[in-house]
Length: 180
Image 1 (cartoon, rainbow, N blue to C red):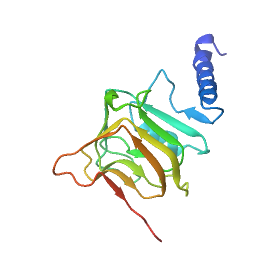
Image 2 (cartoon, rainbow, N blue to C red; image 1 turned 180 degrees about the horizontal axis):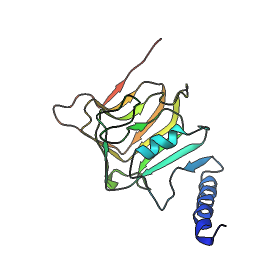
Image 3 (cartoon, rainbow, N blue to C red; image 1 turned 120 degrees about the horizontal axis):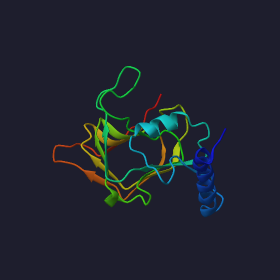
């Protein structure tokens, strides 16, 4: 039987969703994490995106300020990260990833290490361009290959992000067009 303490989080989530829709003029938006919590592992984004069935709804992922997200350098044969977290997967439209509620770089969300920090790739077989994608307030640091790789078409807005590179680092971003 539901108690007031178990019903309250669900009621607050519905309330937050309604307020978000009203503020956006009736647009569909779902905050992938509640405003009282934030994401401490990029694996949460990967696992949530893997389950998305309706990518017409905007998903908002709020990363915890003052957090370093260590991205894997090595992966198992099935793609599971062995020594860190998944990179941020941008394989569908309508994804917003923000550092803190306001998406500002001074919130200090650092993506550290990893072969790549953000993959704009068709990871989940959506088979369409990515649109309405925003990366806000992130700090990219020490990727061993590139910070962002784009292998599918679309529009990605990168706002108030910091790319920290040393003189030995190569490209920040790489766009690849695959023709079959």
